[in-house]
Image (cartoon, rainbow, N blue to C red; front, side, top):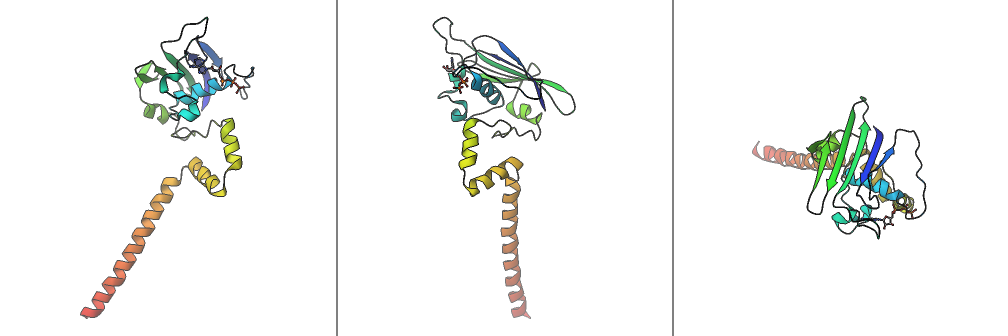
Length: 192
Ligand code: ATP
């Protein structure tokens, strides 16, 4: 999956429509503290359905709408659009729009759902938790995490947690069945 273009408008510190060409192998965004570098990554996270207010660094979901400055009026709507190319070289444009009352997702200019947006990423590390976007905080969390937490992290990344749970359920069922079988043998022995 390749990110081609990102357009942010009315989102956090981006008062006016701002576009970024992303079709390069390595992209560095530089700027003074507080100039909005992290807000660019927040825009991508937000568009991809990030729900955590901690990750989004907001208190209320509408806090992402540009709140205005002395010179600029607050925005009424926050919009983020991302153009991407998948492994089959198909190009998609996904978008998210939010006003004070409601929000919606767009796929190729048509109203869509987050689930539909995620479906075009199949196995791209985009889901309930994002491991394709690693923030500064996450790096130190990983460095400081316990072996158990690290294991959970790796399991989350390779997404085998659900299979481990299924294995546990199956093993319990197997154990129960073996017990039942033993009991049945006893009953058979007594009736012979
Ligand atoms: P640093 O280098 O310190 O990490 P940064 O360049 O990553 O900074 P950001 O954290 O992206 O900066 O941007 C912070 C700025 O965004 C702050 O000035 C904050 O006031 C502004 N900001 C955040 N939300 C909004 C909003 N809804 N409306 C207007 N400005 C906002």
